[in-house]
Structures are given as C-alpha cells and as structure tokens.
Image 1: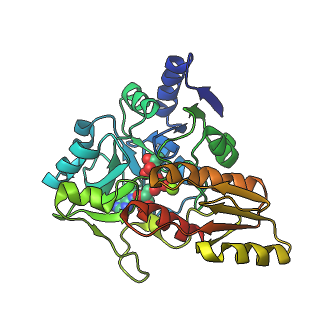
Image 2: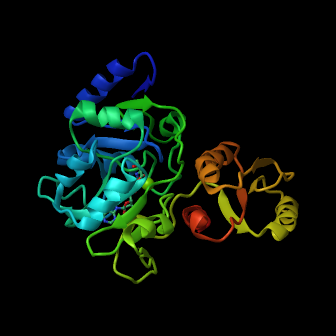
Length: 323
Ligand code: TXA
Ligand code: MG
C-alpha cells in the first residue's frame, strides 16, 4: 500500500492511481462523504477484490462512481425523468441514484440485481481520478464490513492497510456520512438509505419522496441497510439529554471506560462536544466514533439528536451503531 498525498505530487499520484485501476488493483480515494475503496467497475475480478478486502457479503451491491452526468446516463438501461431531474439538481454531490443497469456492468457489482447505484461525487480528488482513469469506479466505503466508515486516510490505513494498493490522501471529508441512496425506477423517489440530501430536499425537486420501509421480513431493498451496521467496537447507547448524567454515573459505577458525545460539555473519560447543526454534526460523527475506539472506550453514550428531517440521516446512523 502506498499513500499519495494531495498537493505537489497530485498529478503523478493520479497517473499512478489510474494505472492501478487499469491493471485491476484497488485505490482508496476521498469523496465528500467518506473514503471509497475503488476498482474498475467494468472488471469483475477487480471488483471481486473489493469484496475480499472488506469481507463484504456478496449480496450487498456496490455504488459506481462517475465523472459526469453523461457518464452516469451511459451506464443506465433506463434513465427516467426523475433520475435526470435529481442528477441535474444534486450531482456532483452526496446522492446515489439507483437505476436499471446496462449489461456492461458486471453482475458482481450489483450483487446479481438488474439495478445499479450511480453517484457523481463532489470532491476534486475523486473527480480528477475518475477523469484521469476514464473508467466508472465501483467503490464502497473503505472500511471492513459493518464497521464505521473512514473520513480520513488514516482511518483507511488503520482498517485496510496493505489490502489496498494505493491510497489518495485528500484530508478529512466534509460531509462525513455516506450518500443518500434513492431508487428512481418508479416514478417517485424512494429513499433506501437516508443521507445529507434529505427527504425534504428530494421532495422539493421531485414533488414527493418516501422513505422505503426497512422492516425485517420485507423484501430486501438495500441490503447494506440490514441490521447492525456502522458500528464502532465500543457499545453505543443513545440517551436523552436529561438522562445523560445518570447514565454516566451508572457506567462509572460499573468501572467502564466511557466516551460521551453530547451537545454540551460533560465530564467523562473521553468526551466530544457535538455541534448543534446537522451538517457540522455529520462531519464530526465518524471521526468521533473512531477516536473513542482508539481511546479504548467500552461504552459510548450519545445524546439523542433532535427530531426532524435535517437530522434524519444522523439519527439513522446512530440507531444502527447502537444496535
Ligand atoms: O457516500 C457513499 O455512498 C460512499 C462513497 C464512497 O461514495 N459509498 C458507500 O458505499 O457508502 P457502501 O457500499 O458502503 O454503501 C452502498 C449502499 C449499501 O447500503 C448498498 O446496499 C446500497 O448502497 N446499494 C448499492 N447499490 C444498490 C442497488 N442497486 N440497489 C439498492 N441498494 C444499493
Ligand atoms: Mg459502507
């Protein structure tokens, strides 16, 4: 594994990254959401290496990253008016569009399904890589399956190390949690995974937007949303503001090393004061969970975020982390 830093060496690193992709290797790269673990999306054996490196179950499809809206459209067997509208409005950005796939996309990318998730990321290094490589790049988050997604190159190194051929270091990501995944194959946007492009944002453009039910027993709609996910090693418990002091006291009495993420300062072994705007909170969330794992906290107490659409994606990740 090599780490190529953004800056003076960037052109050279991009050429090297392109070469790694063209010979079927793995390149980790920054996007605005989280770091991705990329391979040539048109090369089934390269994509196979992604699943192996992550320990990802074969039933969980990958997102394909593209440099332009045209490049996305070219991979779709059917590109609905809805897909066009959403891509025009939100790309480049943290929105993945699920569309019917063309045959050029190998089945391993889509876990055998006839749809593919497409995204044009809003990050200069990601876009430069996609442009340089002239390839669609399949990339899940660059973490081991079911663990917290990486928001820095250091997180990628800690999780995957030599399983990656090259890491492009673009600094800390700015959105901080994974893209919103939206099914566009029916007339109406159906949110398969909430993200910082919110239901209200989608409804503003499409007229309506619905959250797909993730209840167990329902047909598998977005396998990545199954059960436990996005979890640090430590146990995570969500607590209301007025129960926080008591929860800290009880954990202390048990002798547990605790981390606390709250909206106001608290006294704990490790605490992070979280911002009170959703965008700032999302940016800090995974780095905070990683830091508390690194500090060997056994329990992470998280003050429950406020209700409402702008906080929905953050609440979703916290509830999953707490499972
Ligand atoms: O922000 C992101 O989306 C990051 C960056 C790297 O782009 N990628 C990411 O990928 O989070 P991953 O693989 O960790 O999560 C992809 C999610 C999973 O929940 C997966 O099940 C869902 O998208 N997905 C992918 N293709 C799908 C499809 N064709 N139909 C339904 N869900 C799909
Ligand atoms: Mg992931």
